[in-house]
Length: 107
Image (tube, rainbow, N blue to C red):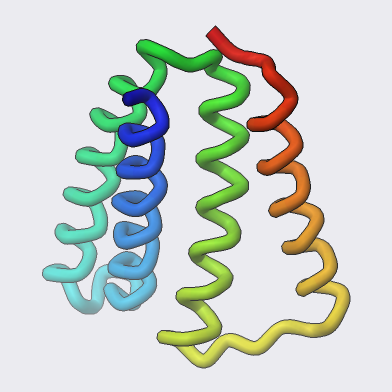
C-alpha cells in the first residue's frame, strides 16, 4: 500500500508543478492555487507512504520519478527540448530509481 501512496504523491506533485508553470508566477492565480492544492494533497499522500517505507527510499524515489515525469510533461505539454546529454542524465535517474527499489532495502 505504501507504493500506492508514493505513486499518488508523485502524480499529484507532478500535476502541481505543471500548474505552477502555467501560473506564470502569480499572473494566473487559479493555476497557482491549483498547484498549491495538489502539493498539499501530495504531502498527505507522502506521509501515508512513509508509514510503510524507509524515508530514504521513499524520498529518492519520489524525487527521481518526479524528475522523469516533469521532463516528459515539459517535452510534451510545454515544448521544452533537451540536449543529448540531458537525456543521458535523466536516464541515470531512472537507473538509480530502479536500483534503489530492487536492492531489497526497506521496512
